[in-house]
Length: 198
Image 1 (cartoon, rainbow, N blue to C red):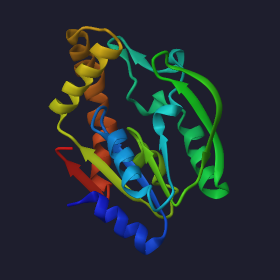
Image 2: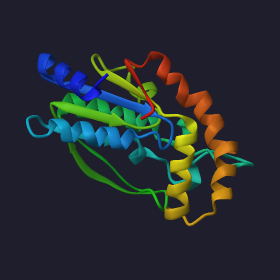
Image 3: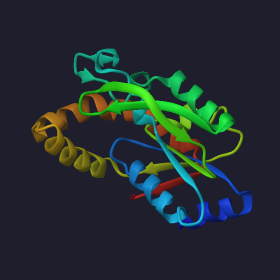
Image 4: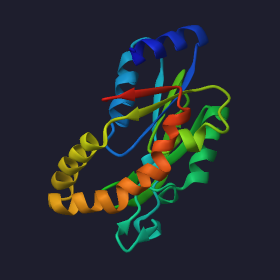
């Protein structure tokens, strides 16, 4: 299946589209969102919104003895995210947070985001968070195999956070994998499209 063709066809017949992209960490959500935007941007306006902008500050993220639960739904300002998306779709413009991922802190809430013909929302839980109130949307779950996601996560964290591969591997098994299995993977059961080997 060519997901770009499916989306283009949907936009052609409906004029607009709201696209929800979910998947586990390092499954390719941002990459797909950007590729869809690039595919359409030459003839239609596209806005991409990341759930990551709604991370809580580090001190407010839930944790266990094994570490921070960064991938859990509670690590995000869920209600604020939902309300801002509602305002965006209703009013065509909204201010969203500027979030610093390396320090896990919100800088401010001054990012001006405008509604487009195609609005793409990507993040770990966006199907869960947003599908309940959107009247019309396309939902996509990236079912990238966990070994690939782990490999990408090791590469990302050892490079950006300068931690060892062993640290990433332990964090993956103790925190990321259990949360993914319980809170993220179930979204694929009711997604419109499930993409494998992404």
